[in-house]
Image 1 (cartoon, rainbow, N blue to C red):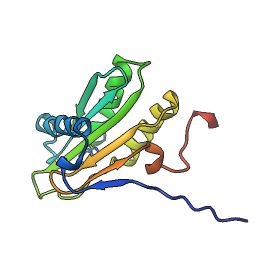
Image 2 (image 1 turned 120 degrees about the horizontal axis):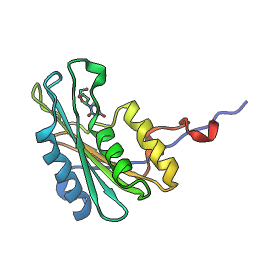
Image 3 (image 1 turned 90 degrees about the vertical axis):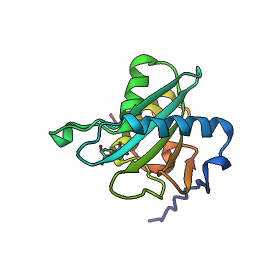
Image 4 (image 1 turned 135 degrees about the vertical axis):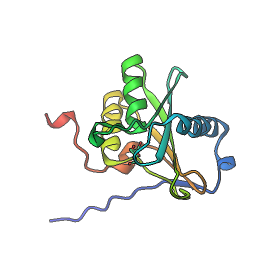
Length: 160
Ligand code: THU
């Protein structure tokens, strides 16, 4: 028997102006994308912007549904759109921004478990890490260098 320690390192920025200009520009697109989220049930809007290796930027936001489970998170809207439009171009990074009509979201909002799994699929497929940046509407911003940091011991196609 042995115990294995899994250490995750991520960077926390105090404000948008601490980000590199590229990261900040991507986050600003994610922030803008919150405006067109369709979130009448949760009133919680999420915007996502992802940068592809060919410099294209693909965006998404959450799309809710009266049949709640039929809705879709912002991250997966963006990632599946990238997969549909540019199936062979790696994803370099994804910026995510969340806000709510009910309260001020002042902490970084990480992607949900299903979105982590969806992003993990693409990271495994392209065999290069995908950086993630996530934030609330104000406050700190978290940056991870790989989806693996958020989903240790993940399930992937190598098991099939
Ligand atoms: N949501 C996202 O878009 N991304 C996440 O990672 C977490 C949750 C959306 C889904 C739903 O429309 C709303 O936020 C409340 O859960």
